[in-house]
Length: 475
Image (tube, rainbow, N blue to C red; front, top):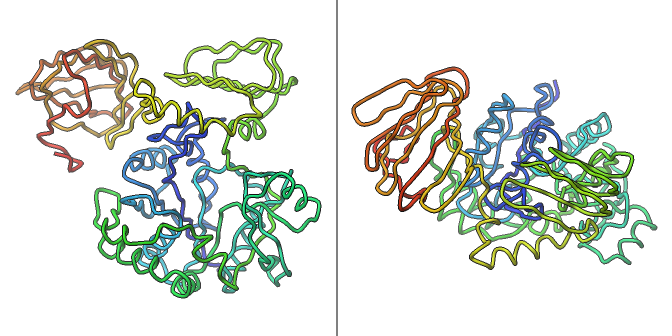
């Protein structure tokens, strides 16, 4: 029987190039762009075949841990491990830490596949054939990368020059090329033999460890120690802070792939996009007869070659061409599709102003180990939220110094503790929690509990919570 691949999914990025849907605390891998699943969930689906893959290992950070857990739960996917990086340290330390963790969870000669959580890929027969070739090549001792057959002269990707063919169907890597200018990209496209660098890899653990020891020993030493000194927190593995911080901040490409003589590339004529701009989302979407890609509550009239998406109210666009119009719950972006790479500059401008900086950081919906909440309305001395509590979960026993709360049950059954009194709320019933009173909300049922919370008081910040008892270790 062929050894199953251990998928390692990198899910810690904080890019904001798809603002306003993507934020620092809710980046693109965890949001629904097109379709009913997030990019992270689509990545989980691609590694769900038990004949081909083991349970996935996720590498992420503190902020995203509950997003990872909840979106995997929604998919019904059991995770082998969720590894939390204490700080950003580029891809080489993350890969090294994942390799050390995989060695403890699976066979020490496992084959691992490194995947980005925010790429869109059509997992058809061609893609699966590329996976097979990569696995066979990695088992033969090569460090394998996937090279995407270029569709046009792209300046936003690095390139790989393909070398001599290998017996497995892969090719030796002749050289890596940095992101080129337009003229150089057109030259490489015309010459042939050049592939887009996808950032996906396949390695055998013994060979990867050997290459780390040869070319980046400080990275491997720091990552291995960070795993050895890691602590368990619920379903998460927290890497040791000091050990991980000692690792050089370097990518896997610079640390190993551009130095090794064992690099191989699998030419991959697949449908792939890193979805790095609204223009790339439009290119990948399903166009109507006028070339528009629309998603959500949208009406377009006399509009062509545009991307129009709404995650909130109804969005009507008229008389536009080559435009991206993106509406989130609390912001709207309008810009030309051919200038979509400039969104990053706009986000930096917003982040630099105190009046708008929060729009680049916080998403209206936040996830917690018990479920989460969506901010519906904010005003002077009041705030309205939608709470959603998973079956069998409960919030901490807590109190607030500066606010009172009203809870209204809109779906499911709630068990509410206020002071010494415990009561059950059903749909359309409500309860009042006075300022300073100890209280708790729990979902004893088997369906999602939804509540409307109205907060009133002099200060409504999330840090006005005194946790008395908490099953998630936060008290």
